[in-house]
Length: 462
Ligand SMILES: Cc1cc2nc3c(=O)[nH]c(=O)nc-3n(C[C@H](O)[C@H](O)[C@H](O)COP(=O)(O)OP(=O)(O)OC[C@H]3O[C@@H](n4cnc5c(N)ncnc54)[C@H](O)[C@@H]3O)c2cc1C
Figure 1 (cartoon, protein in one colour):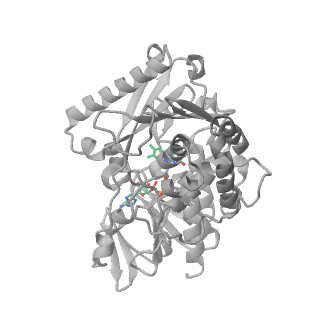
Figure 2 (tube, protein in one colour):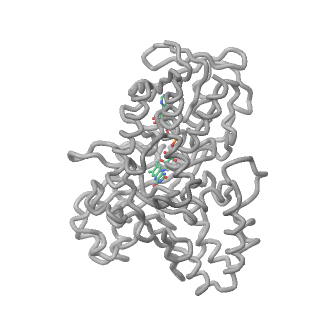
């Protein structure tokens, strides 16, 4: 078959790009290796219903009717989605917890500023200045010169504890490398978490993905699930065809890949230059245990939607020693306003950083044992903080970078992709773009925005 555009991967960004291109009458096909769409934010069947792969929170939430230029509202218009179709439940509150201080975040930035005034009065004005500057800044457009987020933040916030407390949620929600975060990426995520807000789709990720897929197909798009791409064929500076795992070959005028740059380059059959073939891979692995509880978690004191908890007084975004935990992110879906009766009811999800190679190199039996040990440690830790936790655990399951690599093909099983990004989405081919994670836009909303941007760019050229 010959298409106007072939999209490789039905991640959030691939679906979003597909919807827009199909809407404008382009003949588009998305080839996805897995049998379900969604990529890093997909779902899987378990005990008679569908479990979300990740989904702690969707960022960029703004209430209906507020700020029609906010990324969520722009995206709804670009994808022609009705807000009700996302069924977003806003957070009640979340916590940033350090041994020496706790801050509460809501979808109203003023709540956090009130606590900053109380606990860090010396930094209230500086942080206000930063936010005033950021509010006016168009963080999504243009490419800023590289700079270190922690150093830039220090120009506004003098207290190292407050800096750590602000950096923690932002870095765990998108930073691909240890210790350092790019300032532009920090600003994008800071705005989306703190100045906009957090929400969760009431019925989990599957209905949201179903809506995206329906919209794509209704516009004439083809979604080919279970049909992975094994080779990319180029001619000079253009990509011309994809070869599928089943041997079929399809050609197109243009291409979008949401696989990540190293993953896309690994499919190339011709020389594209060392800069592209040696694109650095990411190393920040995450693992998560999902506990299914026998009672609503709030009865055990787990009242926040998300808890960003540092077990140390100083936060370092780095991989802990194997089998150890220095910080974790806890999500309780029930606590989002209106989510208590959703499919994720009574779940507690605990995510932490982990070294991918530790899991990827392990043989099967040790791997299963190590996963079980980590789940036990997490349960014990939560029991010490929320007494009675362990006796209310009904079932649990754990996934690691090995699981992520198996189901999405991510090199090293990392979530936030390469440490180097192609902010313009450009590739070695003039008619192909990357979208999503390795364009530097992460998370569900980041990926959706990135896909829409990639399609806008293509619409002018095909
Ligand atoms: C455990 C976990 C928790 C998360 N929690 C949140 C959260 O709470 N909130 C949030 O906003 N974000 C969260 N994220 C991040 C978010 O899911 C991602 O940033 C986003 O979904 C990335 O989308 P993408 O379009 O860049 O690509 P991906 O999701 O990486 O999609 C790539 C797709 O390509 C497919 N593919 C790979 N190789 C091939 C091939 N050769 N041929 C065809 N198809 C192929 C893959 O199967 C996949 O479907 C989480 C991620 C994980 C893993």
